[in-house]
Length: 188
View (tube, rainbow, N blue to C red):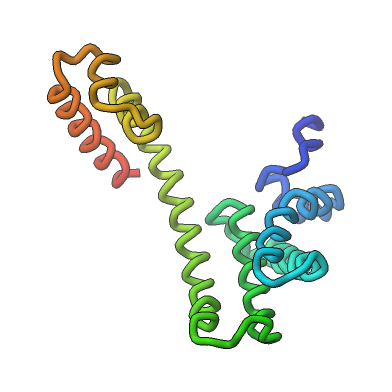
C-alpha cells in the first residue's frame, strides 16, 4: 500500500481520507499533484506563477473546508473539481482587477463558469455511466462499439474481423448493439 501512496498524484479517496485524518502527506501530495494544471491555466489567462500559487492555495482551502465541514460530495473527479474552483477564483480576480478589458464577453465568461463546472461534472457522470453500460453489454457488441467509435475501424474492417458476409450485416449488428447499449445506459 505504501508504494501506491508514494505516487505523485494520490487517488481522490486518499486525498479526502487524508484531509479528514489531518494527514500532512495527503495535503502535500494534493499541492504537488494538481498545481501544474492550474499554473498552466493561469499562465494562459493573463497571470503569472505567483497568481497561480495564490489561486491554488485558495482553491485547496475551499476543498479542505468543504471536506472538513462534512458537506463535500465528490460528484466529479477531484482534478475536475480543483480545476473548476481555481478557474472560478481566477476569473473572479480578473474581473475585480480588470486585467482584461472590461467588455460584455468577459462578464459572460465569469457567469458561464458555474454552468461550466456543472457541465463538466455532468459529463464525468455520463462518461462513467457509459463505461458501466459498455461493461454490461457483452460480446460481440462491446468490441463492435469500441472498434467503430473508439478505435475508428471502418464497417469493412469490422465485417472482416467478425466474419460477417457483407458490411450491411455488420451495420445491422452495430445498430442492434447500439440499441442494447442505449437500453443499458438509461437503466444504469
